Image (cartoon, rainbow, N blue to C red; front, side, top):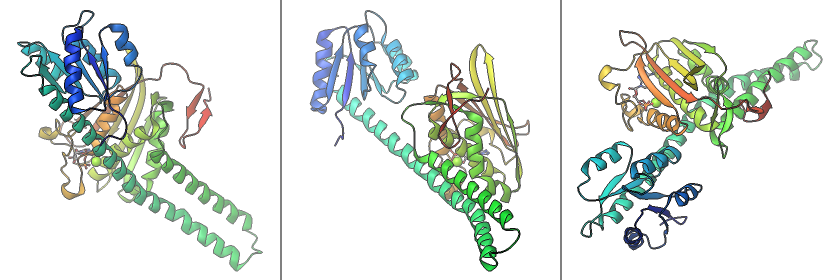
Length: 374
Ligand SMILES: Nc1ncnc2c1ncn2[C@@H]1O[C@H](COP(=O)(O)OP(=O)(O)O)[C@@H](O)[C@H]1O
Ligand SMILES: [Mg+2]
């Protein structure tokens, strides 16, 4: 059952091959909209709108299927691409799979049916991954709610005490001071709730935002957990503006920081560094380094895989996988390494493309745009 109409693109020089592929896909997905593309201009136009699946021939007059695949993966990293190859093109198939193709189907009359099964499997996989990501996002939000309730509790207690004092003696001479305290506490509650809302509401398109301010938002929410565990946070920020989805970026840093807290049950230091670099390309580097139990060398290659966790029932193993996906979606990279040569502590290094031009406004912590001060 599909909520919206599926849209497929078939790229092939040969009209006859396009027809064959369309017929196969229509047999499996009768209501899908299949768009056949025979030349470059058509492809460029088709890429202006979203679609659900792409089938591309390997040998094209104007380019190769591999190029189409790369272009598609760059613009639509999550959309499955199936490579349609002439028989005997084994190396091509291998290369296509390495470049992120979901599958390859050899074009031959006897094999053509595989196209529909391959398309079905690829779409199922996409749906599955989407559900998994949403589940993880909700889990992050859920964990955060507990933290938020905790954070709000302290200022609320103070407020209750202040009101009690005023109630007892409305003519106190320190009433102004008490009002000041009450206002401070209310401001803190307001900050916490507005930052929390940022986790729910995602903007529709990426906005220019400051990485340090996103990290500060997240740190504020973890403040008492950090305190309880005796974790000292050291921040070293130079300005770092990126074009990104703020809710997703909060999720990234929330995942990294909560992992770091978990790794340091007996305290330590959490060092967070943000710097803008221009070594060939303009990017923003973020380092999140802790002094916790560290990552064993044999686990290094696995931590970004879905469901890999060393926390037993307590972990889901989805945090870093989702984090990796979000960073990749934003055109960046993330690496894990040990903090020191003994492998103690962990360091996560993120690189994201820097926002191109100086923006008019910058998204603030609570999601409102403000003028950037010079
Ligand atoms: N800061 C860290 N220090 C040590 N190990 C870490 C750290 N962050 C992640 N890991 C390792 O990576 C695994 C996967 O992390 P993640 O995807 O967030 O899932 P989870 O936290 O649910 O286990 C963790 O179980 C842990 O083994
Ligand atoms: Mg985690």
